[in-house]
Length: 147
Ligand SMILES: [Zn+2]
Image (cartoon, rainbow, N blue to C red):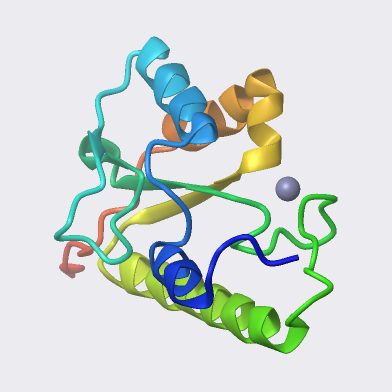
């Protein structure tokens, strides 16, 4: 049964879920505890990444498994009603995420996506982030080779 009317729902879909979700808060407090500084939802970057670690040229997205289609995940379900509508929306979300990632990488950012279900195990998220953060970002402009 549809609880939300279609118009309201499409407004919800346009945002792809609320900001400041619990999974997002888990990641924020984790990164904060590790001692890294970050900014939230920078409007001047493609996709308004959830966390931006400028010094490390790293952006972090915390993605809901349902809205962003975490492949193979139990939370990545498809509603049984209005299925075609949902499949179209999901395809748009996935395509938008791919475009956003490409645009950020072209601009020299490293992009890490953390899935909502991963935040149930903060220690593994922490290990993953530390691995990335300990690698220095590659300079986006290489120094010319002099011979
Ligand atoms: Zn998931």
